[in-house]
Image (cartoon, rainbow over all chains, first blue to last red; front, side, top):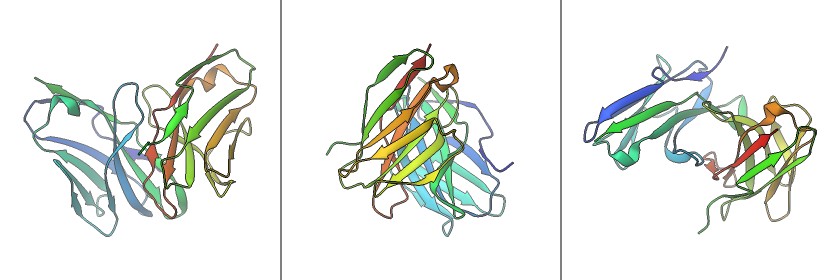
Length: 113
Length: 112
């Protein structure tokens, strides 16, 4: 069925390295995507978003890339820090269901000191 | 500027009891959405409230109901709670005509 999913459930990186978290979506009608970070015991925290008319968007240390041809979304974190350790979710909003966000199952990022 | 707040932080109920959770949106936001997050999974959309009306509903039974007040705060009610309702309940708010949803810390519900 239609879903937003992630390729890797757990990603372990060395502190200072760059991290790449991937996400696949299956509905070409999706027009808005968000990355959230969720630390243990907390609610999801907004990181960055991108609309379907864009291929790339940059924030502070983070970059989101959108490849509509293969329905793929990625989050790149530069110079990964211990405080980046968390579960990362991508979420999509579809034009045919205007208000709800559809989340994937998440990727856990572990940063090794 | 306070973000989204939720109460209580934790709640323990016995199967069959009614549950009421509360949410205050971020300042300037008028839309409130509720999500259920089971352990190890992504949040699942329950419903969204706008102008004190349920605007959209996810795939949840009628035991789940809500309300939005004139000050934009919201309640989530669960009638006849089941063991399977145990989860983290998240509230998210957004600006008028805004798409980005900002989440609160959640209420951890345990049904015994």
